[in-house]
Amino acid sequence: MRRFGVSRSMRGIRRNSSNIGTLLGEEHEAMLIQVLREYRDIFAWEPKDMPGVDPKVSVHQLYVDPHYKPITFSEEKGKAIREEVDKQLGAKAIHELLFPIWLANVVLVPKPNRTWRMCTDFTSINKASPKDYYHTPNIDRLVYSSIGYKVADFLDVFRGCHQIFMV
Image (cartoon, rainbow, N blue to C red):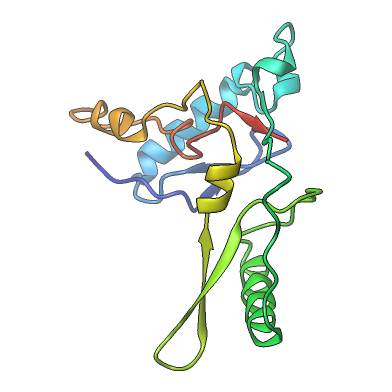
């Protein structure tokens, strides 16, 4: 099985762009783009693209126990966090979301060169959130089921939770 990356962009499918594998040969890439463009009207890009399906089916809300409070950081750590967030925003590795409450704590780990490594600790959010009754597909199972095929479709595996719209 060939490994597929996600950095080559395929524009013109709709108002959004889609990602295809970076290791896909040029001939297969052209064929894939042609098929996706030809059948672009059958893909549901957003929940509103699924007429007749109640949006409640595809919307997931995080309910957080209000007893769990955000953590404040020292000025030094706050500065390191701001710098790292600005760096990731600039690289488009993350984007800003407007939530009325915090989602996960940041943990700063000292590096040997006396700078900080910013990590995200999801322990608090996992404890504060009720367990999901409808689990997303097991990514490993999907990947292993593609063994033996020359071309693999990872449209839903790419995002993992592509089917669930997060509010």
